[in-house]
Length: 180
Image (tube, rainbow, N blue to C red):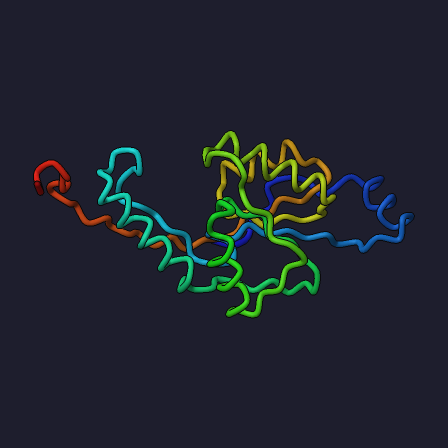
């Protein structure tokens, strides 16, 4: 699959305004998981897991965030990353970016609960606030919504690689009462 543009080129007046204000023509942003690095696909939903399984999922997620394969490296000298990852993963995320020598101007982390509605709201707000002219995204549905909410930004759908991770099934939780 090749990169696909989800929305039209930004209106000419937006480009002219950028030039008149002396701003750089290209203000670029990237999604992280699935766009710059491999994305995790889970075999089961987090809510249906037992506590020990959720703990294992977090352990696997941490390992992924530290060791994931880079899919593409931004070629711009100045760019932003707008990720759906929570702030709690910032240390691991920034360490991975440094290891890959990916140096964004800033990384924006998701502040609300991670669901499609919040993701669209969050990413479109940041994209519009930064006045990005291009944004690279791997999620087709999210890219379509961003195209509607960010009329001055070219939303570019990129091919992605998702690795499927199976969460080991744990047959029984250890109950503190049973240990006594």
